Image 1: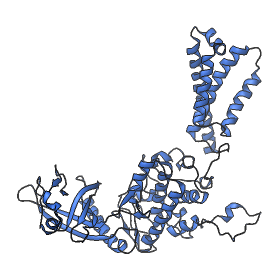
Image 2: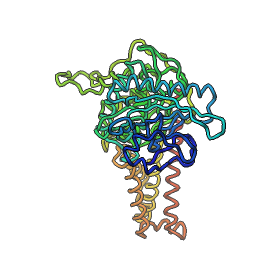
Image 3: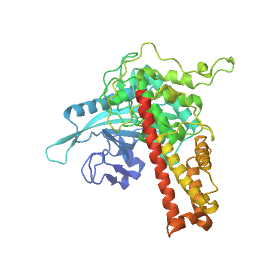
Length: 496
């Protein structure tokens, strides 16, 4: 059997002991020591670390076995392991959080079936490799969940289906309802802290950043420990955190699972909004609207509890009859905000970190965009469409002038041609990959058929090169004109 040394920085942590393959010896031996650094390997004479599962800024996790159980139960041993550049105050906070995690697991994990149970919490004092010194280590032992984290799943699969994400969201919301009702806020919800067991159930992991609060009241200020991209603005600014702070992080997690993209790829810092719907096809309207509301920047405008989100995700009752004159928005199951919301937080944010400012219009956009329907263009899409129009227009101009001559085609024809290209894109009849395919086919046809590039040959000796140069130049001109009008439009929108 191999035992893994838990001393930080041990150069050869894997230790092989052939005698431990015998079950009688394994349960009877009093202790084994690391052959490199002399660290005790059997923690408190009971837990056998087998391999390193992961390591973060404040700790390391090991897969282990409990030799005091009949079946040598698997478990996770977490070691308090802060990084070396922490100040004494930060180190004290980190150690307090580690102890708090053990307390919360004992309180919540041993009560809720989808939160890992706490098995043990202990401190070890071990002789240091440096003569005359001793090292102190802190450990907690918790239930091992046999499965994959959502981060591992999205790396493996790319994206998850809308139904899969909805099932995960509802189960985690039920766990959060329990956590919040017991006076705690998780504060570090992200894909790596949600695990799908082999039986299909979802577990909420890692309560190392948990904050306890008086039930029904705002918490104290945040400690500044958070995960970039997932933490809400109030947590990143060091302000108060609320149950809806967990809902924000959970919504960002859902976006990542639906799109397969990182948070910074989905947040548009120019417009200060989350733009994800075009990257997640087939999402139910109720789910998309709920996620958008969970992502609102002011805490007062989000759902105030996990129970409210669950209510919004429930399908409308079949017995409900809507009057033809009643607008659809009136039948929405989204509850109205509370009358006494928490105070909105300052908007100061690090430059590289997403800050959510989602307008009401974004929350009502349709969740699924059918091909051919009209939908808003992002700046990148608009410039890409302009490049296509200019490039395609330049190619068609060369081909038609070369084949038909300049005297046959009037100026009105060119205007109609360009308007036709713009109309097809505005209706999204051609978009994204279609633009590249269409432009590529048109270029190939013009280059391969000599009568279609005679004009270019007349202008310069090398007709084929001239065709490409003219098409690229017209595309660049179209981009420049579009960008100029976009800037003018934004300025007018700001001041009028």
